[in-house]
Length: 179
Image (cartoon, rainbow, N blue to C red; front, side, top):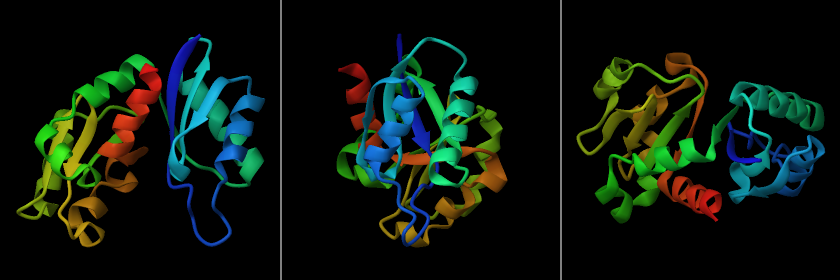
C-alpha cells in the first residue's frame, strides 16, 4: 500500500452545493481506498491504495465524485513522496512563516515547463512573487489577495488542470502523509 494526496478543484460552488467531508470520505472508501482522511472542507484527501498509475487513481476518483455528487470536479493526485518533495521545495520559506495564507502553490496535473510562468510576472504587483518549481507554480499574494491580478491569471485556461493550496494546507497535508 502507498499513501496518496488527492486535491479536488473548487468543490465549493455556491449555495447548497458544498460537499460534506464525511460523504467524500465515504465515496473514497467505496472505491476500496484505505485509511481515508480529509483536511478542511475544501477537498483534500489523504488515503492509502495499492501502488499504481496516478492518472488511473485520478480517473477513478473523478468518476466516483461525479456519480456521487452529480458534477465533474478535476482531482489531482500525488504520491506521498512527491507531496513531501513539493512541500520541501517551497521557495518562499520566510514568507511562509510570516504569512502562510498568502503563500500558495498551484499543483498541476501535468508539469509545466519552466518558462510557462514567465508571463505571470506581468500580473504580479510589486509585493507579489511567482516561481516555477518542478512543474508547479508557487505564488506569494499581496494582502489584497481577492483583487490580485496574479491569482486570476494563474488559471485553467492559461495552464491547464491544476488547483491551488496555501502553505498552511500544504504543510498540514505533509504532516498527515508523514504520520
